[in-house]
Each structure stands twice: as C-alpha cells, then as structure tokens.
Amino acid sequence: MKSKIQSVKGTRDFYPEQMAFRTWLYGKVREVSERFGYQEWEAPFLETLDLYAAKSGEELVKQQAFVFQDRGGDEITLRPELTPSLARLVAARQAQLGKPIRWWSFGPFWRYERPQKGRSREFFQWNIDLLGPDNPEADAEMAAIGATFFRAVGLEAGEVKIQVNNRKLLERKVEELGVRGEVAAVFKLIDKRDKMSAEAWEGYATETVGLSAEQLSGLKDILSNRELWRESESLVRFFENVKALGVAEYIEYEPTIVRGLDYYTGTVFEARDRDGEFRAILGGGRYDNLVDAVGGDPLPATGFAMGDMVISLVIEKYGKKPALAVSPTQVLVTLFDEKGAADALGLARDLRAAGLNTEIYPQAAKLDRQLKYADGKGIRLVAILGPEEAAAGAVSLKDLAARSQRRVPRAEIAEEIRRSLDSGRGS
Image (cartoon, rainbow, N blue to C red):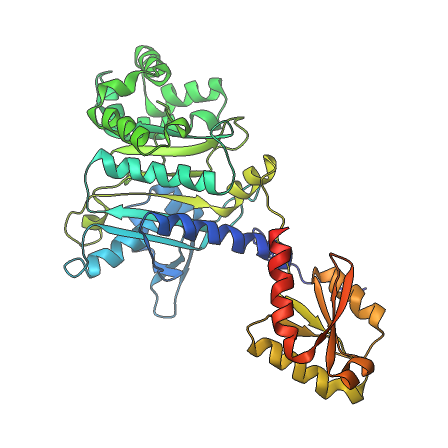
C-alpha cells in the first residue's frame, strides 16, 4: 500500500467545515474590534530574532521560537507573538501616527511546544491593542472588549471570567517581603503556580528562586488575599470603569495573575472558563516600555491576545457553536444532457450577474443524483432547467428544505430565488 504523506506535527488541516467555523470566529473578532473603533493591520510572518530576544522572555525565545538562518546568515523566526511587531511598526512611523492608536489583527503564529488539547505549534490569534493613554480607563476598555466578545459568541458570565491583577501592586507587596532584585524570578514562580503540584511549586520557590520559609509563607498570603486590589488606585479605578462599561459581571480580581512575558508593566489579565478546565482563553495587559525598547519614543500601551484553539473548545464545551453553512452556494443549476449545456451555463451566468452564488452541476446526470449532491452540500435551492422548462422559457425552482417546487418564468428566476432565500432566513 502507498504511504500517505502526513502534515507537519503540530499543524492543523482546515477542511471546509473547520474553515467555516474559523471564518465565523474571525467575523466575530472583526465585529467586536470595529464596534470599539479599532483598525485592522498586519505584520510579516517572518521577523528577526533580535525583535524578541530582549523583550519577550527567555522561554519564548530559546525554547518556543522556530528559528533559522537565512542565506545571508541572519537569524530569522516565524513570529511567535505579535506585540513586538506592533511596537516595531509604531516606532517606525511614530511621528506620523495619530494618537491614540487602536489596532487589531487576526493571523497565524508558530511556537515550538508539545501539541496537546487546546495547543498546537501553528495557531491563529486575535491581537488588539490601545497605544497612547496611560490610565485605568484604557485597561478597562481592553477588558470590556474581551467581555463583549464573549457575549457576541454566546458565552455568559457564569461560564467565563476575566481575572485581573496589577504587576506594580504585586511588585510592591513582594518587595515588602524582603525580596530585592529577584522580583522577576518571583513573578515567574507565581506564573508557574497552577502548572505544578503544590509540593513541586514550593520546592521550586525555595531551591530555585531562593525564598526563605518566611518569605514563601508571606507570598502565599499575598496570593490568597482577594481584597488586595483595594490597595491599588489603578485597580480601584479599573473596577469602577468596567462597571460603567457594563461588563462587571465578567471581571474579577485574582492575585495569582501575573503573565509570563517580561514586557508587562501594570494591569494584567487572563480569561478562563469558570470550571477551570482551560487555563487561558485570552491574556494581556499593560506594556508601557515596549515601543521604547525597539527604538521608538516612550509610548504607553495595553492590549491582549486570544488564540483560536482554546476559545473554540470553550464555545463547543458550552454548546455555543453555531450551525454554519459549509458551502457558499445559494443555488445549483442542473445539467441533463450536452444539448442543454449552453442553456444551463447561460442561466448560471445570469444568476451570478444578478449577485447570486451559483454552482452548476459539472456533468450531465439524472436529476436524483444532482439533488442528492445539492442536499449533501447543504445547497437549499436547485434551478432545474430540463427540456420541458427550456421549451417553455421557464425554470423549475426546487426548495429542498421546504420540499416544494414551482415553475417560474426564466426572466423572473433571480428575483424568485432572492425571495426564497429571504423567506428561509426569516424562518
């Protein structure tokens, strides 16, 4: 037997039914992004490794990036995230860009990690960012965009939540424990908490990070204090703003949220399902130094990213996956014999000219076979142009969903198809 060539490990094939869902998801992303006034943009899929080396964190650069040398010897990577590219683009034309900058994108990314449920090496991701304002109102807008998206796809506050913290608040509390100069290591420790067993995490804290027993106890107290946000003026204003934006039921304070990337500077957040099955649906926060780090002038910024895989699983888990038409075809034109081919092709041409997505059966065949094909593809309407119809200057329009058929003058067929489509949408 012939061996079939397999896809690259960690990538996904999108058959039409999967592509229909991805397109629907992209449409919801666009709808919500534009509702808040954000502009779509895109960056190259290939970037220099230098763009990420000092900005994204050692794990992402050394363990997860797909890196290779081009023919000139430069180190190139398939983009593992988009925020550094955003900073690069803004820095390149910073003086010409009006502020604030509200941009969004949806495209492919690559990370070399172990494929598992909700995670692959190639994935699609929504990025949305607000650059310019340095205030809790901007952070609240980001959280509101995430919550509005959840509503748009049918996910309720009892099913998903957006958990929020502030790295400046956390940094101050960690320093009060007597930890000096190792705050970044403590942040990485906090980020690993729900990825390790309690025993392993405590061992990592004492043996690798170097916390004393007293410091570890104090850190646990910090991470269990759900009222700690009241000590942060930024978070107090943030929660007032999300209430004003009408999304407070989706938002809650979570002292263990810290985010793993090194460039975050203030308020950070992650979305999770309330059952705790999935770790992060989306994540982001404030990154005020990144544009400066890639050669631009200092520019405050906040934003988040959402991969397509986990959100797809959450939508399916809660039964919110829509029934989607896999085929774009609105009407199929039949073909009975070679003698009638010119008439059938002419009818298909006229229907397309009238703005209807029209498919013609590609070879002469019995009507039953053509109807079975239409039904299998989810094509509801079939324009039957047999010898009798051609002789009468008419077309028989069959509605497979309504199980009805009527003969229509050929000159009126396009309008009749539109009426049938409209009535089907209303039912």
